Image 1 (cartoon, rainbow, N blue to C red):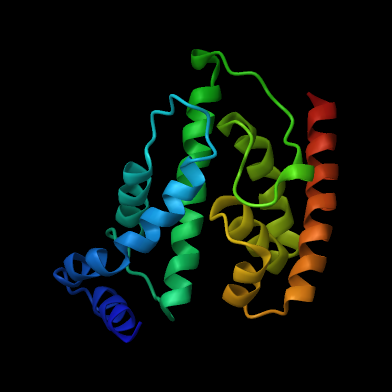
Image 2: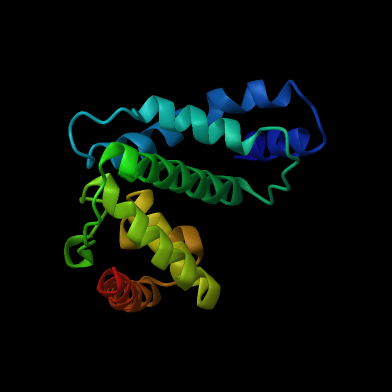
Length: 188
């Protein structure tokens, strides 16, 4: 972990070679997260776990200077990058050019990573963005559970909250998101 933090600091300072040292250290963890997420996608996806990891990595250590406080901060940003990539991919597929139709997201059975078709990510992403504005901690929990496939215990540890708090936040988030997505679908 200290090596990763040092390399992240070097990247922040503009060391171009530091990015080359970072990927081998974090690649396997990112690949496991991506593979876990992609295993719940429908067959025939054009986006593969390896491509998702590479795209997220490029976004994380790209041209913009980043200020990484810790390994946890970096991985939270990686989860966010993967979420954005998946949502962009879903939007592209759902565009009228690709014959997309809106589908409901059923959060009742969302215990780990996404289990619904990727097209449903758009409605969830829009609602999650609204949740982030009012309660960013709860939104972070949803991102870790839904997009990274972490368990309640893993997400609680990652966020530095108790399991009980995480369970309460998860129940609240599911109800809040269900209501927001339902309102959004009623408008369509």
